[in-house]
Image (cartoon, rainbow, N blue to C red; front, side):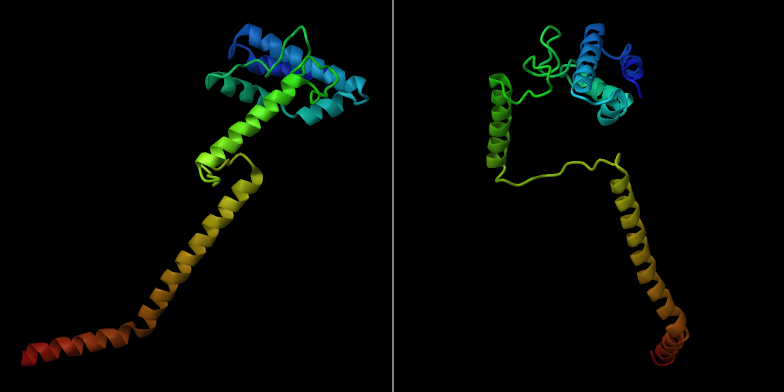
Length: 180
């Protein structure tokens, strides 16, 4: 996909979903990112393939805005460029602001683990990935197989020995009636 097609698809997906200023900021961000990567020797197609589906990117931006977050790229300033520090080379790791942000996130993660005893909790399963869906289907089939195995074994037992069991129950009932 070419850069213009990517940006057009992103614009169409974001249109009327978030504020026009946020649409512009996101389009500028991705345009600058693609251009920077192209300046580094990659083709438009390689960069847009690495970025992924613009519809999915738009959904993430819209969901972030709906959750109360900023719909503009984190740390993005149209005057500075696409990196969190205005670094348009794509290497934002060297700045003080980026380093402080990373360290702050690490501290928050460490504090959260400390409060929680270091245990990791899973609250939801993302069924959007093909291998998670496959695992879910396999688990369902396995549970159904076990259920049929147990019920089938019970039915085989009943059919095989059901006549004998019924005969013993009839004899028992007759003896109780006659002598009881």
